[in-house]
Image (cartoon, rainbow, N blue to C red; front, side, top):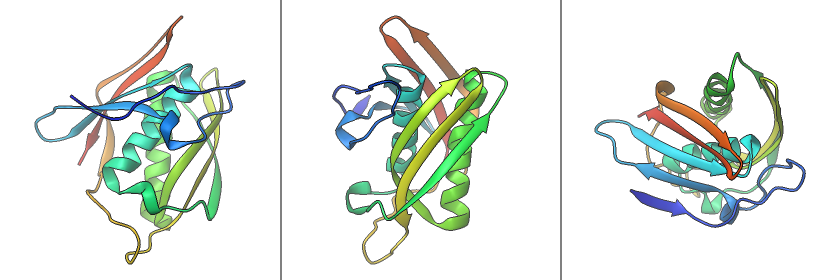
Length: 159
């Protein structure tokens, strides 16, 4: 296992994650795809960390500025489906608008819905280094768990 971002996940009232040092995830060894375990103090933090992990698979985010933002709302039948729908919605923004996202403020995960604001900019080949493409977020090995000590999610990306 390799831990790319460590540190505490900070949340005040479910406001999401505001700096790269606050995202917490690990990449797991997998034969053909990329698996990630994301952690947070609550579902909002876990979902923000999973989004950051996904975009760090695709690109070096150090040179991504917050020039554009999008409000995102998704709903699903359960937390696992909500995580997949959330990440697929962000992947859709990347694919259709060429948006490279680097900050994820998940305002709330309530019931089976999620509201967030995401920040980034359009891909500039002169400044942004793209690493590898993600075809889809899968349900294979998918798991979301919340306990008193916080939440974690495992998700597998088809690359």
